[in-house]
Image (cartoon, rainbow, N blue to C red):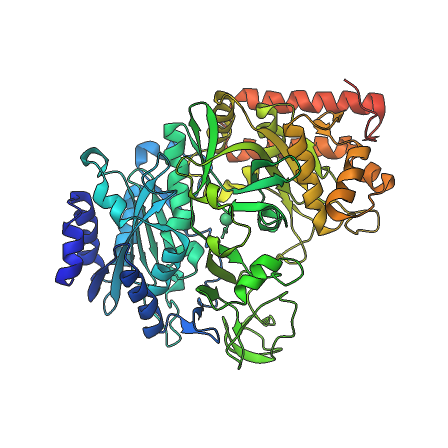
Length: 620
Ligand code: OXD
Ligand code: MN
């Protein structure tokens, strides 16, 4: 370590920081360590090194770069992402992928011993949430990947100064991430994928990630930190959710209403956060805190690590335009054509027949070792970009140290035949148990395996839960019930199909469902009851379709979309019950009782009004 880097560490006067860096410097044994502050000079050094070491390459627009992960390292490795848990805590961690501490710790120590030999390492200081705020969680990343370090500078708020200012009693409280891409092949991708391990220790707030590069596996501040934060939140009485934050704008009434939303992957999360004419605060992870009785949220991140597939001029104009500009963006696992420009699936332009992509040298029609044709880009290819490049950013909310006051929460699944496009819950508890806990996503032709299979996805947060599902569900209920002005909960489903298997409305209809929810927060629209909540009236939707989309919305479509499907709903609740029973048998009985009472209510409705209950026909 140079005297300058050492000086940066020393200035922090933080023994735990010294211990962490010192230990892994010795254990992983990099050739050198570069310590970053928040200075533009240090950030530029990291950008330059990512290029110099070949982890990124400059594109046609010189500020844009491209990076490839190994062909077998294109998504989160769920199997090898585990909690290492003290023996005495094993029993409490029902339903989690875990390994006993001694065993897991020994294995990861073995794998990481000397893993950085011949490489440089980087140490960075970040903050999850705004710095110097009630939400702040300081973090340190130690990595031997300049690409990872560069990504984090785009995605998170730098916090060397925050560390400098930490009070004595706070100095031991931060998250630590140690990452190594491991041995690299001639293309610069991780070789030892069989030894890929992501071991998380919520007892000591440290995550070890070895032999990988894909950011969902490597970037500590993203999903690893999220798991540590979910655990911390559970202990401290706040929430860390897999949610966007956005502001719905009613310009006529000069109203700005904040919504958060959770949607399993490929269920419309980013496109809801980016509805034209509204504003975005965050696209992936939110912290919720009760501040003086208010339900307040911050975007944990500073940038987006977005899925690039299907981002095109028509469907995502704002993101697309940004991706076309000469500004700092890292494209990962897309094709670089001979024009040195990036190409991806669903881009809406003709892509070249050859180039370089995640497969290596690629030509149209080329097959991988398993005989599968390799596409232009990977389906999970990404872009890494600052959020504040977006014209629709809500600057005020994005920068607010105390976050924004949330008034509505949306839970959206992918479901071709059961739930209505938008429905308001009776109350917070009902929303958590009937809308959030029952979230499911149907597999599509784009996913491997059979189509139309429903995968349970409570709160769209299952992959990141670091303590049991039942307690987490209860904590969600408690949190919302304790604030003074509890947000309304709504469900969304953009994927209902008609008898011919076609979607009933266009993608733009999201805006109408959102504005109905927005109006409901101010008690503006009437509603019809169903056994599971409150749905819109036709006249209101007709007007909203006209106002926001200049579209005619037919009564026939309305009746079809908003029919209550009794048997389908009972089946959905039974699936949820079974999933909770299997995943966390210790889920409190009153949660199961609540679902049973709802099932009884639906059965009675079915008796009285029939299996398919058109809007307006149900009465309590
Ligand atoms: C995810 C992501 O996998 O945001 O959820 O990348
Ligand atoms: Mn996510």
